[in-house]
Amino acid sequence: MARKNNKQKKKAQHEFMLQKEQEEQKKKELKQQKKQEKEDNKWIDDLDDLEIDSEEHVFGLKKKIKKDKKNKKTKKEKKVIKKPESRVDAARRKKRERKARKHPTSYSKDIEM
Image 1 (cartoon, rainbow, N blue to C red):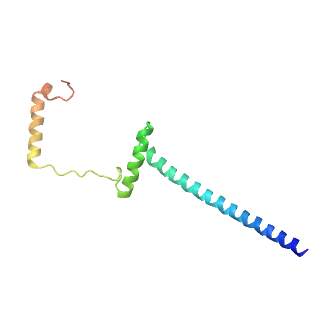
Image 2 (image 1 turned 60 degrees about the vertical axis):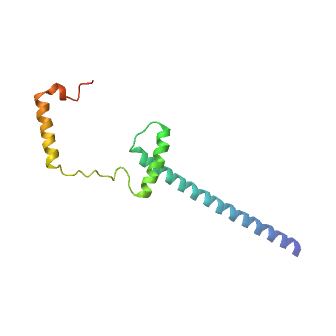
Image 3 (image 1 turned 135 degrees about the vertical axis):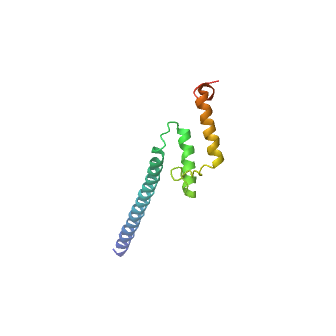
């Protein structure tokens, strides 16, 4: 009688341990799946702004965005700092504009050569 009880106890303990391990495994899988979905959604948010059709470009951009995030320099954050126009450059620009007004056909950018 005592042996039967021992066997039943051991079986019950074994089943309980297996059940616990399965629950832990399910929790780990769910955690991993949530982590993966979160990362996928992060890329989708970044790529929605870019609006690109081809998948090759998308994969290349994923890598580029990831690299930029590491450097904390994305295209959105970059600002072009314009230097103030020097006196010489201003004079050249004004001269070019005067010439363009005098001879509009030779200086127009719309005409193709």
